[in-house]
Image 1: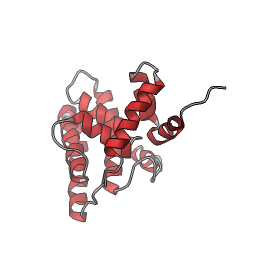
Image 2: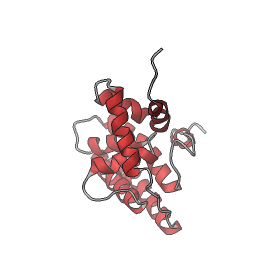
Image 3: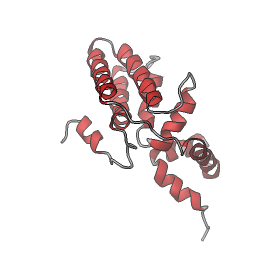
Image 4: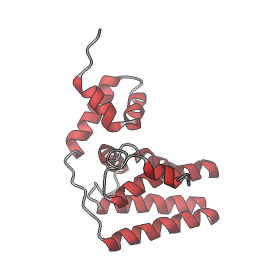
Length: 171
């Protein structure tokens, strides 16, 4: 019986699918992945998400609705708007701003691990080279992060995955 480091199970539980993504990126090396995730927690774990005003919440909700409507005419422009909107919203909530997308997604992964990959997919898909269906799926997946940031709580942990079900019209 091999003893696993105490951090592994806790990190897997905290990061969910993000844990698996980082392990895969490290070629299956769980120790390297756990070091990276542990470093993220040290850097961003104490980040205090700032609450949004009702006015800001309404403004972001309107922008998201506009991006979704734009998708019909121009999927690329819709993804560009969704990408910018998520950057603005995360910055207003207190996450790292600036041009460093990786630092922002690392910080978001500590607090919104279940849905941060949707943001990555939107960011990558807006550059093109993917089908309209892949763009649509990226936008749907990013909605989970948007909802978590807009609601003001950690998505995927505190609120469960209720918004994913609602986002697909099954509730």
